[in-house]
Image 1 (cartoon, rainbow, N blue to C red):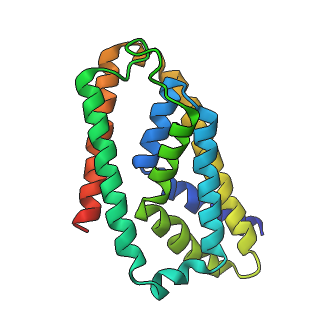
Image 2 (image 1 turned 180 degrees about the vertical axis):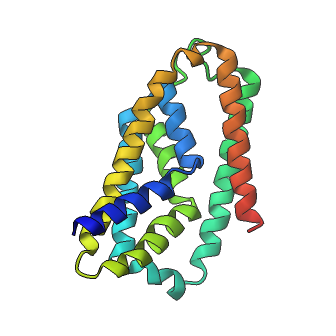
Length: 200
């Protein structure tokens, strides 16, 4: 059981470490200290649900529903393109810095909705959690629950560390210019991921 849990934790952590749209958003919210707890909980709980679906054997649905992949791919690309455009616009206007617009943090609902979209409209999330983790879990027959719990623990640990650890970058982002650079970087990342989905 412990071996399965450790394998689940290690694999889950290795899959989530890659910088993607979801991680970039959590990092941005953490630096801004805006709705960090709801955002990290949304990410971690979403991952837990997807891991549970994958480990329970639902990963075969992608084979039974061949149209599901293309729909998720195009919907995800469209969303990422739009979100990237908003980041480029923020970089151009310089509206992300906390002192540039006192109410720019937005509502908790808006932050959670964006986080949900970045998570559930991203086909890579399904490949990592439902398909990959689901298929690897079959190696631990009788201990699949432990494997799943290890992967879920990795997700919670990573998102909480990223969201709340980003506060340490506060002094760097006290300068408005740093926010422009972050917005440009996030915009480029979103568009590169979107292009990867379109041309995959």
